[in-house]
Length: 474
Ligand SMILES: Cc1ncc(COP(=O)(O)O)c(C=O)c1O
Picture 1 (cartoon, rainbow, N blue to C red):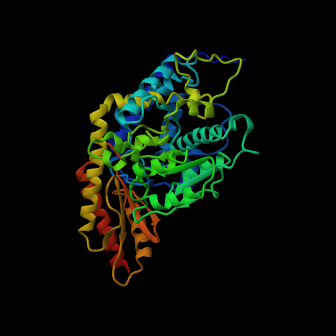
Picture 2: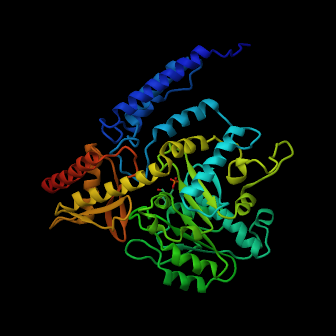
Picture 3: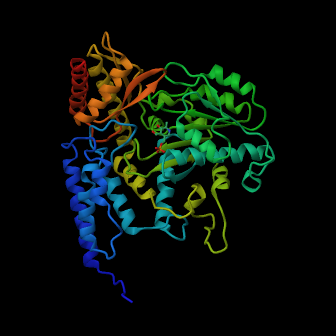
């Protein structure tokens, strides 16, 4: 039998090589085309083949991997990536994330990693303070906003059924009182996936009408709630993925609570508006909700994966998530067992990176990051609006700009799709399309700490020149 003997020289070499490769990627990311260059087949040829019979040393693996993936990487950490809502990696958070892998802690229990547990405890306290959530709010460090929505609504399902005298964790949903779920007509797709996974049914949710920016209409919500008997969960949104608009939480929360309902807020990126004194007004009433979902990997610029669930009544989240087993070492209550706040059992100590981002930016740095991205979004909208072929569809209140291209004699939907395609191929910046209230549109999302005014101007020029090329090509 061959023994595997730890060779610290090899480990050191592999880490150093990874650091050098990472450094050169970051140094070049602003210069390379933003979109990926390789096809799936090219990547399969570079990375695939049968499972090797024998291994090779880690340094070679790292070099081969970096070479193999290079042309298939999206430049989403770079300053001119404006697709979906994807943040970059703040330097402290990226470095902490590397150490997270090196330390390789199981962040399930205090017993498996006191360091991970206490770091999360501290970061959780900072987040509650920064986002202006009620004292005592529990935070769980999950993979992304999908799981944050899942965990927040799971806490709500627990609470509304408990009030109805039903223990859903023990008894499940069969025979349970009916749970009404009401969502905004513009709820994000992950809300419906969460409802599906929780046995509440994505298709059963009542959808409430929205206004032209996608904001839930309180009068329509009141009407929908009037038809709800018994346990009720309402899912509102802070930051529409297309327009950046906020549901009026200060008007929604009293309507939900006067009927004994649970208010969950999907604030994947919009919740960070609460960290900016300049923008907090957009999210007035946020503290009145019962649970919130957001992401570190969007606006806080923590590397993937980093989602955050927050629940005002910590016991509701714990009851929905926790399990007990005789072989575990449960904490005595004086310390945090992180698995009590997330759907996972064993998991990566992802709190280190969030802690590092918050420690590095501080309260002012987070506010500046949010404000800067919003100012850059306004700048992008203004520069695009100056071109007669561009129509800005949304009120630019946050970091999202929604535009459409219109030229006399051309089908504007088809033109908009072609412009998106041309911009992606050009490589100066990267963004994608959407369909907004019956119209094809292009989304611009500005969420990266390293984007500058020059990046915005260069990208706006590239977009306008793509429209003009399309116009000439016709
Ligand atoms: C409003 C909203 N909710 C939820 C999500 C899902 O987040 P994640 O991709 O982190 O699961 C997104 C992603 O863009 C979003 O914008």
